[in-house]
Image (tube, rainbow, N blue to C red; front, side, top):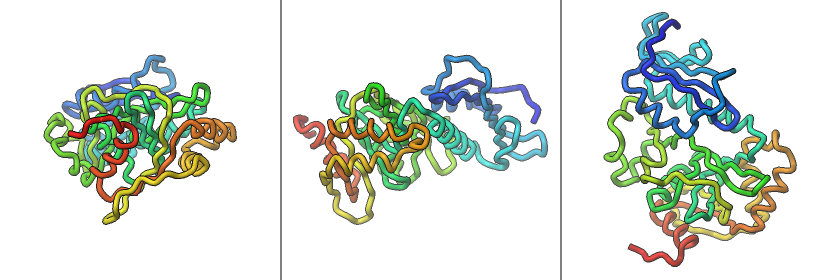
Length: 290
């Protein structure tokens, strides 16, 4: 791999994980710069891993190629699939190496400073639900990881791009029409978004957890929000931790302290609109329905 004509090159830090992204793909400066802006790096460029996205690989003429620290990871892939890989790898490295935060596999949103954590395993509907809640007026902390700081008990943003599958994306009325046209070249099957794409000004900040709601999408079922005990809420958080092995037993004690001040629920999702309405009725019963 030999090229030095980058249309985009920038350094980032996701928690303690430092990395560099460079690309010669046309217009990548807008797409990559916008999608990765939440991971801006203020700590210099020493020891950063480097992701390189090429529109054509000079080694063998492959149409596209992705390199990590000079080793070819993918070739013949679309820019969208390369971006999928980069986002997934950055997420894995950042969440797996942090020992400051308890990283819970969960969506995280807030309503007027009240944090709502949505712990769930993959394919439970948490990304679709998080995006729908943001479109309905919530602020977004993450669709993937709730970062709980045991020192102050707050949940913090993890501003990786939101990654949506086409069926989830297509249930959001008007969302596709509002996206920048340059996103299309970095879309394979999944669509990548930032909070402002879902609703301008919707990037959330640190807040206290008021609600733990474990979602699960079940085709054809009736949507139901069911209270569970705080002990069950603690289990839902702990069993979805990315880094329990790093932060140790103290993490469980910290999470136990948080759920003592939270309301805990399971949410069966048969209809997205009904699920959003159930959560709005819970967190904002005073609102006036449109």
